[in-house]
Every structure is written in structure tokens, then in C-alpha cells.
Amino acid sequence: MSQHIVEETVKAVLPITISTIYLFGIPLDQWVLILTIIYTVLLIISTLRDKFITPYLEKKKREMSKATGDHHVT
Image (cartoon, rainbow, N blue to C red; front, side, top):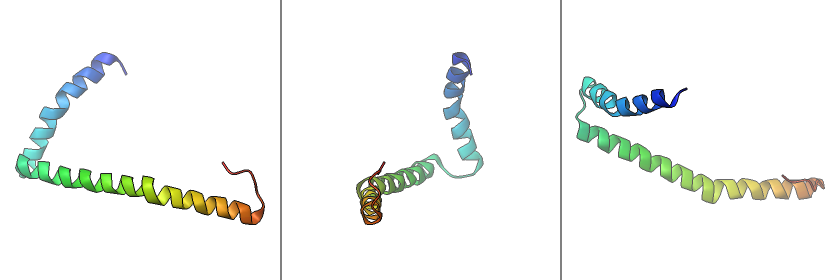
């Protein structure tokens, strides 16, 4: 994709998004609230995954590898 097409697409995204939002009949301030809530939930999920779930799974993987005698943990 050429650089010119990318630049023009980026310039058009905001007006197209605003127009589409109004077509659905939801005011812009409500869309900002909805998107902020979605963004916050995604940040919470990402943080939980990075701080708790991934380390837990890596620990379990190491324990399973020790139990089976496999020393090639990647």
C-alpha cells in the first residue's frame, strides 16, 4: 500500500467515524463514554493477563516440565 493512500485514509477516518456515529443516533458524548469504558476494560484485562495469568501459566509449565523430567523449557 502506498504512503499516499495511507495518509489519505488516516485523514478520512475521523470524519467518517463521526458521521457513522450520528447515523446510529447516539450523541458523540455518549460514544466517548462507551469507548472509554471499553478501553478501560481492555486495559484491566491486559494488566491481569500480564501480571497474573501469564506468570501463573509459566510457573505451571515449569512445574510440569520438572515433574516429567523435561529440561527443555522454552
